[in-house]
Image (tube, rainbow, N blue to C red; front, side, top):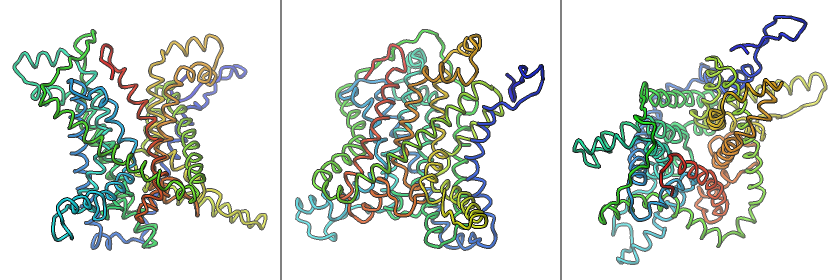
Length: 562
């Protein structure tokens, strides 16, 4: 097979070169994913609705400043919390370490907007914390004591850090587990203590993994709408909603979205630059178990407290509050058509998981067969959607789908005198397209990692037996990479259940999912009435967390499993 085409030698001795269908499929997929970005650029260039000068003079500096502070704060917080906890559970023994190895991933199952609702519910003036303080100390009004402002950029930074640090923890721990023991022993021999060894040896070696985890966390920060909206922090993502829905200016929203695209791509560039030419190799082929030093009593309990803090605040607190509210108000939630909302979420998440899994298989297998830069470039382009915030993708998807609908409707009226209405935009199909564009990277990366473990001799054996690429994929590769396919589908399923900005913009009229239902009611201070829906989303997120933890625990031979 050629890199770009395949020669049809079976057709009457012909020597025609036919396009490789896997390359064509990858290019078509990449084009569909790139279409929203191209649409945003096109709409942003419309001079008739240019409000850029007005935005610069009014609210844009505030949007930019808040977004910058949020990114810096979340970046620093996730690196500090994620890398430190990963190092502790990997290299030391202390009370609770076996539990913390997997429990530190649990906050990843909690959507940030749900944690924001719960923390505000507990910390506001009428919440449990302040009511308890007033009862204990006899305070009667806010003038009697000082309490930090809840709806602020600091609170938003703290919430996002608590739910996003597992990205850094996951990749940092994987990097620490795979590091060479001999390097730590040499560092100790040269007189370095544990702290210096961490900062001078382990941390620089794990820098590429930390950079990737931080970039993922910051991309989610740029995408965040529910938390910043609830805390009244105007960011660029919130500005897209404001300009489009409140100002009724789609072109202005496209201009705001283009700015967010530039920032997101800049983060991708910075992440790749941070690990440019960084290569770390093992100095021996023998893999030894990592030495896990038992900490002294004072240090052990400090390590336990440090690891326990994000678990309690990021998972135990919201889960317990939601469970209590769900038990007391489950009849109220059921009366608000909870079953229908859950079915809507399951329906969309199921189709999104199927679509992204198919895309991932096509791209990963195409790259494996072709081994050409054009194919790999097409695959990378098709997965760039994960770096683009959901609100931006929604803006870019709405316009082309609307154009297609309007065109088909005009043709139908001219030819058949029958209006078709909206077939794509404003329907569930638009949501599925948006989810596939946003999460195709998860399907591709996961399945590509699974295929990389299958020996290339499998293709040769299948060809010898007369099987073509399609049959080889169906009968040989898919059974072998079934765990990777299932993992990719589960991850996309859960991310789709949690996705809020894209769903808010692209959902059909009078169509709600669990995410939009929870956001709507919690924003109106009715957390109790939507607690069951929020708890359902959190429960769905625990499944991939367990799978990821089990995979990571088996990452190093000889390593003590949690």
